[in-house]
Length: 119
Length: 115
Image (cartoon, rainbow over all chains, first blue to last red; front, side, top):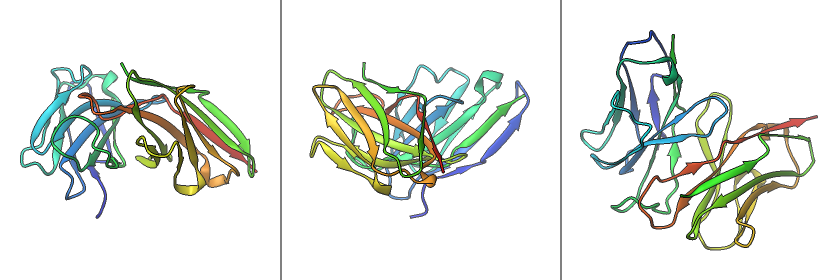
């Protein structure tokens, strides 16, 4: 168990560029979540996968954002045409759980996050 | 909609003093409640969770929290603060057996510990 791994840890990009973040969850975990955290705020939910199926998306996830989990293992979060307001830490988390959207009772483990700075 | 409110964005204590971080939740059904800790430039680590078993929950690093339905509260306490406890603490709620986001976080409380 190596924990939830995120890459890159830091990314500086110019406004208008596209960026992609990768998350490798704990290997046996079938649930994967993406959150966004800005300075002075708690994490805000973006999207949730059960295996390869994206079951829920937050209204924060504008059409410039897309997330995938093609084989039910690692996931990517892409932001197109980045804006300065996208500057934040993007957190990935994973857990095990039965099918469905409700909390499974199992611990949700977070990665160390990917910092995005848009200049 | 479920939500949590953390009272006090910043709490300062002396080393050895009692730590009390406040969290009130809003939920129409019995929720699951959590406390997470975040150290600088790191992700979140689970301190403890309430899942409708015992109302007094013990967590890691000497922390505990008590679920009080009548007060809709889930305050985090530690009898004696240590310098290493300085961090950001987040309370979170997950509605029991309902569709929706897994965790909804409060805005966090920064704990400072002075010697």
